[in-house]
Image (tube, rainbow over all chains, first blue to last red; front, side, top):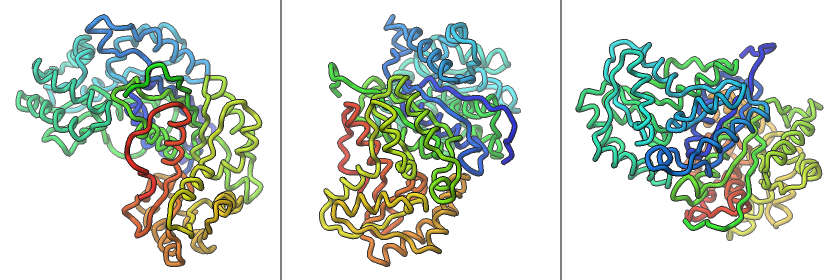
Length: 245
Length: 245
């Protein structure tokens, strides 16, 4: 892999939301980078800070504002040399503009990147969204998808409660129980016409794979990993669109 | 999981040697931490710097000294608040003392921790070591094992060349080819009397599992992850000794 001479940028990950999802993004950045050896890889700084207040609690229930901790972490990564900031938490994207306004380096938009990918995919009109109740309340995915002409359907209230329980189970390390719940919610969305399932919470790609469902599955963590590699000047592995199967 | 009030320390990972092994340690720290939710996890800072010069090249062939880059990275992690430093590269432990002498926070010793684990395991006398040629040349594992009364056997020269090729293949993302080569070398060590195989290069746990071999397998990355969780004041998951099966 020829990378000599090209200017490459340091990637900074605002992590801890949750830690396993952060490790997942870091792993996917590594896998998405074409490399014959260590030196072909990109430098990545991670601050996995599980003390960042819960995003859904803040958005829905007036819980502690995670904005200051997100901004503080972004600034520390910028100071350490990061030029491309990524946030492996969909709900935290509610704070994207305030993070962008607080630092002078690039902050990628996982939700916008995912909508762009779907917009470029032929033959789909209805997207089924699995996300936290906080992300649903912000309308971030629905607006991003509507802007590119796609409809977004979400779980009904009782189903959404089950999905939130599944996400909590992943964060507590109980993946098998979580998987069964999440797949049940996804299948209801497919029954209502979803042609693609978006795993719009970074805990979900830890438990759901493309093979689990009858329709295509988009993993925004992989979408973000590939966008980060490109933005940092790395070379993508040649695998064709592994995030949409 | 009750963690309230306990003083917990930030873990810093000197990474990039290689990046996939760094992500593996981070994942294993997360899995080793007992947690009901994000906030039970430890804060982890990672500097995955794949530009750190090759350790085996420096030790065996007079290649560029990785010492300065290791020390610079350790200092940056200390400045960022890390109190427990870990290095997911066995060969880089040749520079452990100079790193320890350059900073004032704790640096864990993956090789020493692994030897302590083996010393506490009954019924074993002969350890088969899979490691880089650089690690073998330093004698770090052999000395650490001998100190606790264990014999260490290493691959013969032609076998060691095959193992180095396997390690390079992992770093190039060609895991399947790498696995076949590494298992062949491990089986030769078992044929020569090894009662336990130590995966003494952090690329090897990415491709070899306990189920692949007829004897117990020790993964020093998991040993280090568990030592880091304890040193940082976290609570270990109750799984009994998953690193020795």
